[in-house]
Image (cartoon, rainbow, N blue to C red; front, side, top):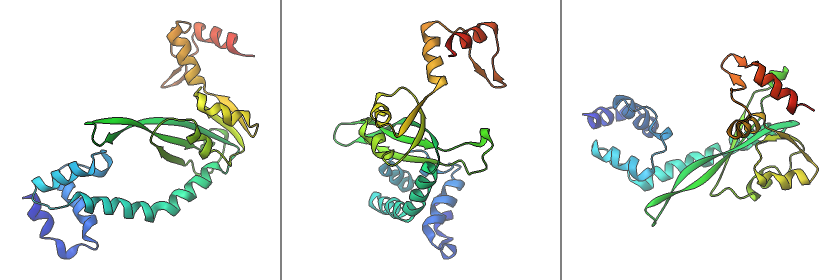
Length: 212
């Protein structure tokens, strides 16, 4: 059984928790359970069905311990991302359990990207993620409180106060702008394809109208 495969090799685990997570789920042909966004109680139940007793509190301790160990690295990535005159910002909706309500609520992962490789930079292109339980504007305002430079982002109103400060300049996102134009029927073909810019007559004409 899967359980016997895991536990009979206990003498080789240092620490055994890592071996449980990796070898057990590889044997089950379920890759990287921790990256599938399963709540801890569901992970505990999956382990239990295979005869492995891992309480949710134990898994929570592992997650909390990993978070504390990784905190210095996360902070180093944050400093590296914002140590540049230009960053790209966006947010990603993520479902989060809402205990007692029998459903999930929508939280946010704010992403900030530093990537100047297209302009010849050789700096590593990192991404810094920040979680928030909602999409209120004070979250990105807090994330960018010490940043001075250019922020490329969509038209989310929560960024406006950052621009009003004068220390951050707005670089609007073409992809979002053109998507809105496409919805309005002003653009009938995609501007960007897998092989690059779509230089159809309609698109070239549209670019001419939008250019200063």
